[in-house]
Length: 598
Image (cartoon, rainbow, N blue to C red; front, side, top):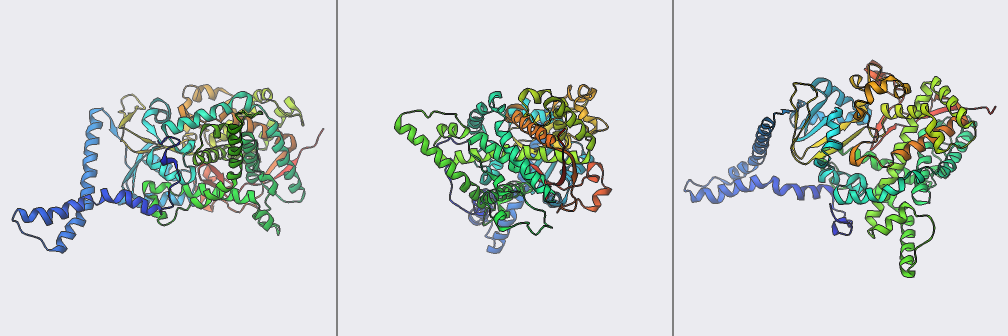
């Protein structure tokens, strides 16, 4: 990866993605054509065999490209099979499909639009096993639901897996040179920069959470008093965005100032003042840019051909950067003044001030800000959204959580760090949300060199992992496996993190539970997220005592055919969407009853 001050980190010209792809791919792709045509035109006459007509030379040259690619592909497969045999390993089962995997692409895209997370993967794994290989557009991808294999990717063989250049290019127009899209020195730079800001002292300062939670809940009460349900997902996303920007930059995006949306049935829905509010233009681009990036994933390295003339993500990232720019420029001006005066600015150091001291590269700084805002907003917002979804479905859990909270902090006291640590059922509740509805349900790394994954049963062979291959793993599906979590794995039950099931399933195999990843790239903000989610739930349950879904306001609902499906898909009341994180499509519209103060 490039150094922080290298030209590679500077913004490139806006060249159409398709042209960039062809410029990179065509020379190698057309090499067999050039060799064949040169041989027929230059070499063949020298051998006194004769000269073929032009049309036949062109035809042979064109045919040589797919023929040459097929031969190279077969040669690589032969060498890899031989390498696997020498290691005593078995090849990973390949999902059979039409040539080019076009049907697989269709299934993946359909799942993103109207399906259930990972349903296409689950179908394949049911047929071929929990570790499979697909060949989409003639590019191999490995998918695994096995904890031991995920452990190899994230921890024991960490150095052999990276984001890699292909995934970097796929995500660059959104994530740029940020921590989620980089490897090696750039990744280490971001990690070392962020780590000090997630110390216990910093993440235990709950004044920021309390200030933004108070405003969020006050607006919620006002909207409910008007007789309307609220989109809890929207409300809590504003809370997490404002809290994260306040915590990291001591400046807030102030997204809550736009107010809360009304349901579509209301004449007040999408009023110009709400729709055009600066924070809402920021959030719309923030969300849409992630969805568009996710839509590239099925096409792997060939995604630029789907956005041939225009990068669909860049306009949204530009809008986001326009909101970040004033904050960034103000901090850079402070830095310049400090250097000119030869003085160190007094006051609390922020993530942003620390960042601008580390580099002058504005692109790197903007990318770092954007990456950490995604982490601060989306993951905790998803946890709280699906948490309230479960509260609406399980009133007995609401009562038990309120009893624990009221017995420890009462109905108005602000909880402390020690208070949250003593709320065992609340922590178990959050863990169960993270198990069934992990914010990042799918993730990938790319193998560098050929390796093997360990056998899962005595007598089995290890599995051969091909080099330079995208390796996808799904914690969403892994967290729901009955052989890993017990026969009640699909049941929402926080007690599984408190009773004997912990010792039976989780303690001997901790890699079955990975909501924050693991290994050197484990989420630095893990405890921050637990604290923020716990704090907000305490404040929420101090103020409200009953939750119910509002199907009359929910714009997107599960298909009727889902009721005939297996597992939780048959019982879902909302549509689950996928971008970089999981979310409720159309929001989560709920009604809540205020608690009476005794």
